[in-house]
Every structure is written in structure tokens, then in C-alpha cells.
Amino acid sequence: MCVWFSNYSISSRLHTDSKGAGLGLGSGSGARDARTERQRAAQKHAMRSDVCSCDGGFVSTCLVCCCKNNTRRLVSGLAVISIVVAVCVLVYYLVCWPDVSPWQNVSWNDRFISAQHIRTASLESESPPAGAGSVAFTRAHLAAAVAGSAHRNSPPPPSPAPAQVPAAHHKPAPVPAGAVITLRSEEPSTPPPVSTWTDAGATPPNTTIAYVGDTNLGARGEAVYDLIARHSSPVHAIVLVGDLDYHDNPKRWAQQLETKIPSDIPVIVAVGNHDSCKWPAYQKEIIRLMARSANSTGICEGVVGVHMTCVVRGMVFAVTAPGIFTADDFNYASYIDRAFTNPQLSGAIWKTCAWHKNQRAMQTGSKPDETGWSIYQTCLRHSALVMTGHEHSYSRTRPLSSFVEQQLISTADPASNSADAKLFTLSSTSGVAIVSGMGGESVRDGTTLNDHDLYWASTYNAGSDGAGSVVGGVVFCTYHIDGQPNKAACEFRVTTSDGVVSIIDSWIMYTAQP
Image (cartoon, rainbow, N blue to C red; front, side, top):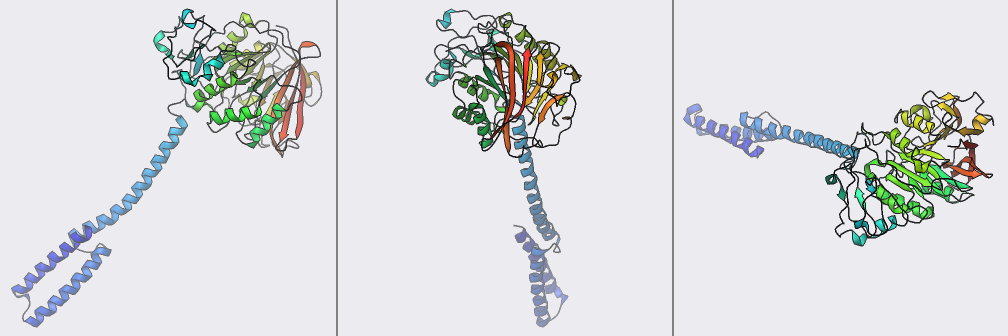
């Protein structure tokens, strides 16, 4: 198009020149023939010149240059559009639309799976108990809640709404026979109440719990699960403190865990920041895992991994999500306080707080303050052990009378086998915080910022002696030992990819009688 218009302008110009020649601008046929040849030569030169450059006439110059400049602009425009699209895709992933973004303050908005109290018979004729908006995994019934895909296309029976929440805010989900599953819509300012427990109390002898976070889908993660499955004494429950697989793949995570961990071992899970985008899908898998056996169904209630209280063999676990789902009206400290002060749990000797993130001073890496101190102090007030992940290393504080100030109970040498480092009592004035973040995703390098502070009883990372081939580690605590219900022995064990196990840290702890 551009070349055609350019040639048209040249032809028009030469045609005018030819007319001028016919009007007497030259004389004789020889002169006219010479001028005609020169004009034809000039036309060919001008056509070549106009096609390759911008030195032709007005019309040809504008059109040819316009074509060339627009081509460059088109290429530049396409490059800019590509960059914009890439940025949009990145933003889409980061905000995890339509799921919850780990970087935003979020409201409830029906994003979490929960369940009403479940009854064995005549669900339609029964009134929901107090706090029916909370989740209750009662024994032998969650299996029905997750087993029947055949029921998913059938309309659910009506679900009565709790008194404190308008019925219109509850969205009933397809319900298998024998169970009621609903989506929770209460604002987090009114956390789910803890319901009646019948099995909180004395812990049976030699009860072992495994604690670990930041697990991995590959061989490293499998090595960590093998470390748990092959522990020298039977493990009665696993507490996963968040960041389950780093791939937003709930089904693969659950499948890997099922292939390595026996189905009769309950798995208690706290949400991690790398899980939050797909947390509703993780919740469904967790519910399914908890329904695998009578040992794991019925042990937890609340919002799965966010506001959840679990009772395992008489021990109480309060699971929360500070720093991850962080709307202003969340109050995790209040929830923990309510969980541990429930009269039905008063017989529990051992209490544990489990969440993913931590405060800067409560880990040996470079993580910033992300949870606030109120939850740490609340757990201290209830004589509860604090277990977190997030930082891909291991650390254990000495007993502290204040987590905020890192106030030591005594000044005993952390490297010694003194009562302060290796033997202590958990009480309302003596608390310990542990980071167990070596679940296989990675092991933090040796560059740490505060691991030499006096309040650490033990630390471990890739820079520690002999850590070169280590792929992960797990904290194991065995409760009610030596005939003493309030005595426990704990270890931090690491494993290599070849399955070589080493004990890095060990201690004895007591808990003050409630």
C-alpha cells in the first residue's frame, strides 16, 4: 500500500513534467527524447529511493516513513503488551484469585471448610448444639462425610443456623447420609466455641507425638515421612506446622503422606503461608485423612488449620494461623485462651500451641516479626509448649518467663546438661518455643542472626557440624514416661537421603499440674 501510493506520487509528478515539456520547455524531438530518458531514469531512481528511504515527494515520504516507523512501533508495542500480560499473570498468581491471598488482610467470606456437629441418626429432627457453626469431627461420622461422592449431586437437607449467625449466611453443601457439612461465614471476631470433649484427661503411657513443618513433595519429604514412620517407638499423632508441599497441590501432598504414614496415625495440620492460596482444597484433603480411622476421626473441631482444637490421647492442641489469615478482627490469642480454659479440657495435663509463622526473636533465620507476641504470651500463661515452623532450621529456647523480653528463668550455661537446658518444667511462668521447620523443603544455610543469643538451648541448620548430607529433621516427644504422667522425653532427629538418622538435641520436660 505504501509503495503503491509512493509510486503514484512519482508518476503524477513525472506526468506533470512531461506536460511541461510538451509546452515548449525544450525544442526538437531529440531534446524531447533525451529529456524523456532522463525522466524515466529519474523515475526508476526515485522509486528505488522512495522504497528504501524517505527522500521522495511529500506523499511518498509520509507514507513510506509512516510504514517503517509504525513497524518499529508495532514491534515495541507487542513487547510492551507481552510484559504487561506477564505482570498480570504474576499478579493473578500472587493474589490467588479467587482464593485467599497470603499477602492481604482477609475476611471470612465463606473461604474455609467447616462442619456442624454431627449426629448418628435423625439429623433432621435434632436441634444443633451451641456453637453449631464450628467444625466437629466426631468419631465414625466424618468417614461418611467424605466417602460418598454419589451423594454430591443430591440436594442437601436443610441445615439449621446457629442462633448468633443469620441463617442466610450459611451455604449448605451436598451432604452424605449421616453427616452435615456447611461452609462457615461468621466473622472471625466471634471464633468458634470449643464444644464438649469426653476424652481429655490423663495421657496413656509412652504416647509419642511427631512435630515438623515445611515438608516437601519429593524425595526429601519422603525421607522425613520415613523418619516418622520408622521411629523406634510407635508415633500416635503427627503435628504438621504448615507449608505442606510448596506446589499448591493438595491431592499430591495427601497421596504422598498416605503412602508413607499409616492410616491409624492422626495428622493435625496448621496452615502455612505457602498453603493459603489453596487452603479450602487442603482442608478437604485433611478432613478425608482424618476420616481414615477411628484414631483420627473425632479428635478436632473448629476451622481446619485456622481455628482448631484437637484432643489426642488426653493432650490438647490449639491450632491457629497468625500472620497468614490476618484480618483485623482475628484474635488468635483469644481463641487459644478459650480453648485451654474450656471446662471439658480442664483434666488435660499437656497442652501445645501449633502455628506456622513466628516472631523475629523466636527463630534463628532472618524472618521478620509476623505473628505478634500475644499468642506466645497466652500459650505461656496456659503452660503450653509452642511449636512453629516457617524458618527452615531447628531451634529451641531455654525456659523463658517472658517471650517478649526473652527473659531467662536462670543463667545456666545452654551447652551444659543443667536443668535449664536439658531439664525443665513448663508452667505459667516458664515457657519454651520450638521451631521445627526442616520437613524436607530445604535446610537453611549457616548464616544466622541471633543463634548465639543466650536464650537458645539448641539450634541446628546447614552450617552445623555434620549437616552437609542432612535433608530434614523431626521433633519427637514421648509423654507419660517412667510412670509419671507429667514427664516427657523429647528429641530432635535428623535424617540423610540414605536414611542415616542422628539425634541432635534431647531434653526432659515436666508440666505443672493444672
